Length: 394
Image (cartoon, rainbow, N blue to C red; front, top):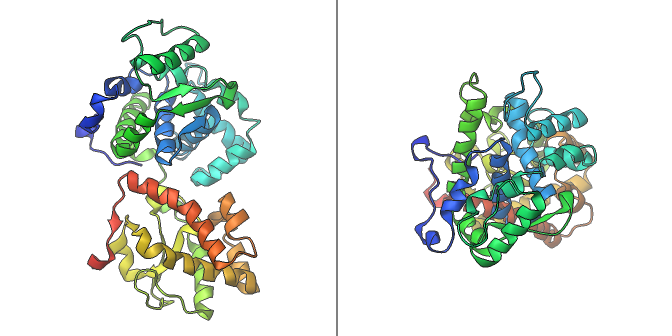
């Protein structure tokens, strides 16, 4: 969750972009929403763009929305848009989350990877709820750009007319953040404008903080009896950390193999090490095995919530991961400790199908790990995560 100051929570964009983009129109994308999913829509688009996406389907955006709303709805029992007088739920996004919970029986503190895997598994059953989220918000979110120049249109026009209008507008008078494809239903694709992509990547932290602030104000208004709502949009640390099985795995490895600390090159002391995330937990919000490493306990607090320098430390990290990989496939006892991680630490499909499959050489293993980790690392950097300089560690 992006950090922000309520006193400075307005949208702040680098001045250079005001000369080329309609930042005022962008700032109105959060204005006067009828339902909460307008916030989640833009938040999902910003997150996808920060992950180097240049286009996305309705389906992909809505999957991101469901995953982002999961914790508030289930962990903290927040109503996204209140309830009707008969007690029924107003918000289609909240309905989608609750439907997924009933289908999957995932815990309220499930990781984002688990949630997305469950969405994929139950995609057909969720179709009605997901389709309902496409009826208005994709084009209503752009209303702040409408009727400024050229052709004018009623904002109550039908979906087809509105999408045609915005596509024409973006091609002539005002460049919009995205344009609409010709596909049908959830397969319809949004193409993000190159200029807006650059602006969003350069201002991701500010934009997400602004969205978060507007979302909190909306949710607090619809949940007036819920205290401290700002802390209830994401899972709490102590409820999410699931490292015991990974610790057992590395204990087993350290009993039979000398492992060098990623940051010191000294041997890990089995009695004085922590299991830590290479890319901070607060960004990835999961405890996947591919991102975890043993490290000197005395350095863990110094690293804190920062990224290791990629060029200095990734290959060292990858080599330790490869030692674990070799032992998993060579020793039955280590294999059993690895299998105990399935419940909490082995949900990434790419890791199960590619990284940890038998037969990878060290170079193949490093390349698979880098291919999947580097975009996540770069996205964290763009969101404002600092790089830890080991030379100045205490």
